[in-house]
Amino acid sequence: MKPMRKMLAAATLAVALTTGMTVALNPAAAAGTTLKAAAAEKGRYFGAAVATGKLSTGAYTTILNREFNSVVAENEMKWASNEPQQGQFNHSGGDRLVSHAQANGMSVRGHTLLWHAQQPGWAQGMSGSALRNAAINHVTQVATHYRGKIHSWDVVNEAFADGGSGARRDSNLQRTGNDWIEAAFRAARAADPGAKLCYNDYNTDGINAKSTGIYNMVRDFKSRGVPIDCVGFQSHLGTSLAGDYQANLQRFADLGVDVQITELDVMTGGNQASIFGAVTRACLAVSRCTGITTWGVRDCDSWRGSDNALLFDCNGNKKAAYTAVLDALNGGSTPPTTPPPGSGVDTSAWYVLINRNSGKALDVYASATSDGARISQWSRNNGVNQQWQFVDSGSGYYRVKSRNSSKVLDVSGFSTADGGAIVQWSDLNGTNQQFRLANSADGYVRLINRNSNKAVEVQGASTADGGNVVQYADWGGNNQQWQLVRIG
Ligand code: G3I
Image (cartoon, rainbow, N blue to C red; front, side, top):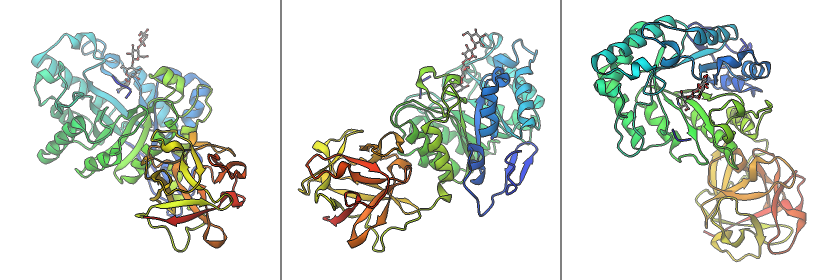
């Protein structure tokens, strides 16, 4: 495969643990200090995939119990694990996870009842009606064993092909007949009527042939009354995020199913934190996106090895990606303290930004169009690399987009340090790409970054062409003040 949740216990929350979890929102919600608390303030859960063998490792379990309120077994509820011989079930691993979850106020996602991979050898060797009967018996037996304990089941996992066909994946299960998926959903509903029943897949992180194939199946199931409640988007991500990630979630939600981010991990790199933040905001923007699960806890727990794809490093420290997710979850409850200028900015206009100290213009150095290119000041020439548009991020924040490159001002690497570089980067609407306009005298404004709360300035109050543009603590200096000159 390509890389591709009583502590909630806040008195402000009503928690019902039966087959799952219900969260009542406190209208005056405060910012959460853990992933699960911040997510709960937004009516969502925050989960992790768990290797049950690690539950006896204190460093691991401390983070799990502090930050997460939903768990899913990384491997122990797969067919090869829990029915190693036909008709002989071993639920020890899954039972251990369920016990841990129940003892710690966590809900459980079941993963997965049927999948083309990780099948026991005996099933791999079967076909036709024998395999179909064995598969449906597996669904019935496992869902019955866990009846009342699973919030949501990944009933079927990864049944669609990669690439442009939008078709089902060829597999022994598919060869038993195209109705194998709906048969599995009907069997799961009969065995555990209280569990939400989900379809789960990867490479569905935007509107593409594969996600559209799944979309058509879900629409068909809904129209024919096949029981399906939710769709999981695994979201094993690389170094970029599809621009229509949120729109894709929304189109599924519009079919009348809940959606969840079920296996989130992101390749390490300059924009790892940005992508984690953008995914979180996308989920929050879709009312039927009910929660996010990361596929593991610490980088070293991840199936992606050296990708360092998770929110905690191997020592259990919170990474920038963690802060990006927590900030995104808290996003709605931390409004800016300074409103935009009374006149506001026209988001359809193009502006040249003139520094008060140097009289020079904010400039993409050498008209670069690449991610990471430096931003400097240069003598005003009204070139397209000196023209900027304010793109509304809501709550009084804007991205500042270059006319030349269509990239936006970005505090490199989510730095919160004085001197942190201002570069241009693809628009991910990260908090390190969002700025509010703070008023200075005479119509000048300071650009204050949402993530760091620092101001965009000309480093060292340089007056030279090529002078470096960085962030620095907001002290209102002339080199932190910019005049917005509308030119288009
Ligand atoms: O436990 C055995 C060990 O005894 C043996 O020595 C070793 C030899 O390779 O294998 C171990 O089992 C491995 C198991 O993970 C536990 O570590 C399997 O080989 C290995 O294939 C299995 O990989 C899992 C993979 O699914 C396949 O089932 C990954 O941990 C797990 O993260 C991954 O999770 C999948 C989701 O279920 C579906 N979506 C994609 C996601 C990532 O691939």
